[in-house]
Image 1: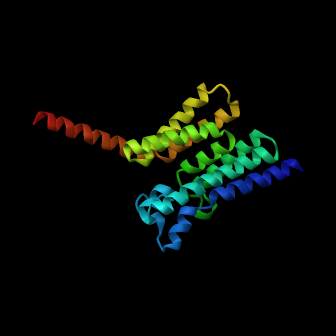
Image 2 (image 1 turned 135 degrees about the vertical axis):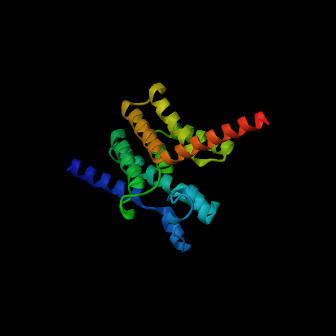
Image 3 (image 1 turned 90 degrees about the horizontal axis):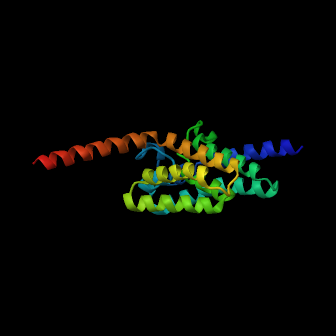
Length: 204
């Protein structure tokens, strides 16, 4: 019976994660978010299309849909593994949304939320790194990639965490690098162009 209840809970976690709040807000304003800017459904693109207020609400709600299943799974069953699995289901629900034909966002906010639901101190550290990197570079992808890299790094050096927690950070961090592959290509190209410009200027 417990296995059956957990299975239902994991499915519900996936469905909750699938809720595309950015798309919902955009539709309220009669905007097709997937045809604006990067086409992504996350807070950054919502900010481009609708402004910072809607971007903030999208980020908070996307984070909450990761936090809620992870936290409830941990508390209801008094089981950290259950919370971690629920958090991962929600995380992948955001990336492969059942409401968007299994397409979705890049998972950054939902990952933060899920990690906060299991290990608040790590979630806070990663959020701080993301915020700092964005403030310094004005590029959301740099913040996301910095936080994802740190999550993977912490999985090897944070001694007080369980192996399953470490695995969660690795999986989420690696997945975020995959969902940001186009951003990585763009950043590399931008870097190369900047180097070329500097070389040309130095010859003048």
